Length: 253
Ligand code: NAD
Image (cartoon, rainbow, N blue to C red):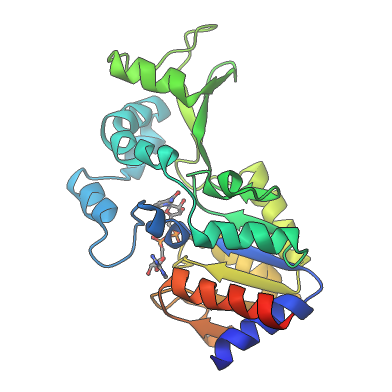
């Protein structure tokens, strides 16, 4: 309870708090993460030889085809999932003016669905796609229809280029990433939720806050590389921790 109260205090009294979320905020919406023990997604990805980086460097379009045949069926169900208490909490914290924005590694769009308006999706969003040739934007429905009709990979109506989803394939630094990094660097508190914090460039976001004197809160079931330098670490199930933090903020502040 001491830790919960400390988190509530830090959120309430910080000048510019920012949240950084990972796949763990969405597991309770039914979307598997990568690194939880026995994660279904992780096991299946290994079974399919997921993430063949050579394929990416050898030719992006081969990779896209592999993506559509093996990853996409695993990933696309996430776009019909609903936000849970973790997403709703962050929306409420934004409404109360207690957090400035959410930097997320997730591609499920659930922070936006919960109502958060300042969301930096550093790895993109599965709700849409674009042509690698001319850049024309497409809705996910177009991609789904093409796949159902076995036109893999989908081709652009305008230029016949390959249409891929608006997500990163090799952790490229997106515009949202750069904006999220800047936000973290100017924050005095980073609340990380449901992330192993193992993705290399995401570590930079955490360092960006810490190196400028910001404080770090880690809420994650498994240890992270930043636990030793965090102000508070809570290694428990997110939804119950968040419920208690939310209650504490409502009751005392
Ligand atoms: P990760 O899988 O590496 O880590 C998730 C962490 O969340 C794990 O350490 C796990 O212990 C913890 N966790 C899971 N459920 C939890 C719960 N209910 N309570 C507390 N902790 C819980 O995920 P990551 O750090 O986001 O990095 C992996 C990459 O996977 C990211 O790039 C992300 O884009 C991608 N990914 C996204 C989704 C999604 O969009 N929902 C799903 C799977 C993977």
